[in-house]
Image 1 (cartoon, one colour):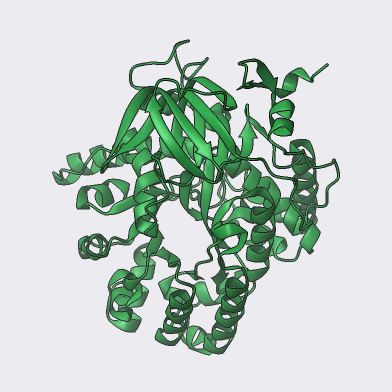
Image 2 (cartoon, rainbow, N blue to C red):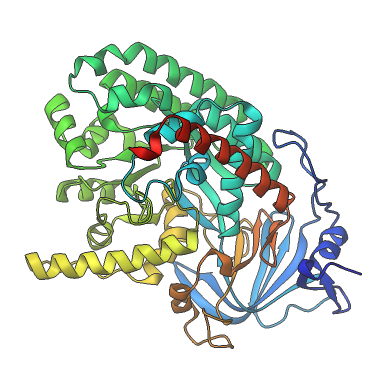
Length: 510
C-alpha cells in the first residue's frame, strides 16, 4: 500500500491517479537513499521531463505582457516549455493535475545568503547581532556546512524560489552552495562575498579608513580565489550554474579592488551582485572617499555595462534611481532583510517602482519563504508609500501583488538579460511553480477570478509543485530531490551545535 503522505495529484496516460513516488518512478527518478551524504557529488537518477501541467490559472507571457489564462495547460519536454494553451492539450502524455492551483514562472530571488538563514532565525528578533552566529558558520567542516546549506536551499525550493542570486558569505560557502545546487538542479548565480565573513567586520565597521587601504592585498587575493572557482563551475549542469562576482558593498572596496571584481565579472559574463547603498552611512563614506554616491561611483567604474543587482539601497538618492533605470539595473528589495521584527525600517521599494527602476524581491538571510516575502514587499511597501505621501506630499506608487510577482519573474529575468527565464511561454526554460489559491486560509474553496490577489493570503506552505528545467523538485508540497526528513534532521543537528556554542560563550545573555 502506498504511503498516503506521498499522494500526489498526478495522472498516468490513461488518466489514473499516481502517488508522488509512482510519478517519480514512472519518469525514471529514484528518491535518494536515507543517509545519502550531504556532500555527495552524484545526483539521483533524473526524470525524462516529459509531461503536461494542468492548472486552474497560469500567468502566461503574451508579447511584452503577463496575462492570466484560465484552465491552462503547460507542456514540458526536456528542459523547455514547448506548448501553452487554454484547455487540455490532447494526447496520452503524463499529466500533473494542478486544478485549484495558480501556475507561475519559477521565482527568482535577487539576493540570498543560503547557509545563513536557519542559524539566526528566532534568536536575533529581539535585537541581537547576527555577527557571531555567522562567524561560527564559517568554522564548520564541509559536511556540516553542506547540511546547513541543504536545509536552507530546501526552504527556498519549498517556497517556489527556483533561481537564486546567491551571495554566499565566503568562498567556502559558495562551494557548498554549488555542491547542493548541482545535486538538486537549482538554477544558481552564486559567488563568494568579498570580503568574506572572516575578514569583513573589521573592514566594514572600521573607525579609520587606513584599515580599508591596508585590506587591499587580502581582498585582491580573495577576488582571485573566487574568480578561479567561478571559472571552474561556470556553465555547469547544462548552464544551471552561472557564477557572478559578489562584492560585499562599495564602502568595503577601493578603486583597485572594484576594478579587479569588474574584470572578473566580465570574464565570467554573468553580472555583478552587490549590497548597494545599504544605508546613509555607506553613501556618506563613499562620497567622502571617492566623491560620488555608491551608484554613481559604480557607473564611473563601468559596472553597469554588466547585469547588476543591488540589494537594499536605503541610502539611494533620486539621482541614483535615474542611473539604475538608465542602465536597466535591478533593485533587489529584501522586506525581511533584518529578520522578522528586527529590521531597522522599511526599504525604498515604492521609490524604485515610482522611478521606473527594475525591481525584484530578494530573500536576504533570515527568512527563506519567498511567497511570504512577496506579501511583505506589498504590505510594507504600501505602508511606507502612504506615510511618505502624507508627510512629504509625494506621489509614490502603492505597490501591488502584480508588481511583486512581475519583479520576481519577468523583471528579474530581464535584469539578468535572459529572455528564456521568468516567463511561461513556448521556448522558455521549464522553471515552474504551482501554488494553491483555492484551499483553506488562502482561497474560497474554488479558484477565484483574480488569483494573484490570493497570494496575499498564502505562504510557502501553499506551494504544491516546483520544477526547474523540467526537473521535479517539489511535488504535492514535499521535497523530492532528496530525503526531506534527513535534510531537516541534518540541518537541525548543525544549528543545535551552533546554538550550544553561543550558549557556552554567553551570547544569549548579551
